Length: 417
Image 1 (cartoon, rainbow, N blue to C red):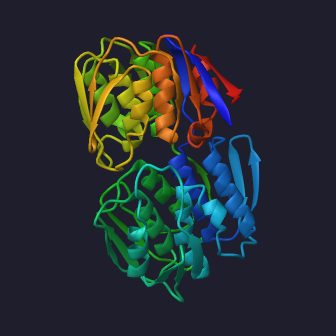
Image 2 (cartoon, one colour):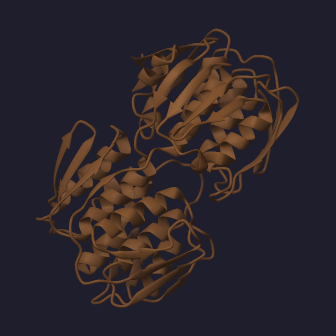
């Protein structure tokens, strides 16, 4: 067990490059199972979730070589379609394996996935989508078994635009007979990135990034090489880090249109934003209260709700943040209140009364994004903070302390006593 020790009240200044997106890499790694051969994925950060996905693919028989930030995944000898329970429970994204394994091997068995405890994330949308294209799915004793002698194109109409279910359906449908139409599809940029990769493999997918996706099934796919899109959540975290420390930071390798909902709110709060061709500059300003509601893309991302909540604890006036995606995503609030924040939670709404300054304290990360939020709060707080359960943070932020130190932060990693 490790912890971060952070000495606050240090302005962040400089330039930081954003690495590949975890939420794009994981489904793309799963998609390599759709064919036999070596696929190459570039700009892959060292993250705990990615390591878990590597372990799962290796158990299936894949040979994986990492060369710096590049993964070479050889799926020539994949044989087993059963996913070990202990690995499923480590990572929610393991559910992405359901679609490609069903498409290639016509069967898959897995346990319910784990991940951060941020609220119920039922997989019924995944199951219903696969059933719409011919899969037979049974749930017994905590396991899910799906079989399909032959997947057949069909119409999938989601009740809710689920990112994971959209991606799973896309990967299953690329090898189905006939055309599949996905309506009310999630529109996140990571879904478009998956479409690009699948089409490089020879698939026929159009419409990703809109609410309607069409997949024309084909008989066989081939390996592909791909540079993963940049991580918009990581980028947003560094933008907020610059704002909360009243710093001046240029975030490179990010498309501004991917996070305009975040930069718009930062402008509302009083932060100065300048966008370039592939970069965003943030300069701190006098912070003022704001109202935020998380929504599916292109709305404000739930993954940046916690970091933004840390920011507005120092804003003048009152802020109201409403979480519409995950019901248990205010676990960071109690920890922020240990640092002096004035927050009241009513159901899915947090009411934040801004104070001039937080105070350093010993706090614990209860999930990935809550951990990022606590690091940001510690950067702005008076005195020294200790942040425990760093392993949550490592799931989605590569070498976070090193990147923050490159911008001037006083943060270090230590073994927990």
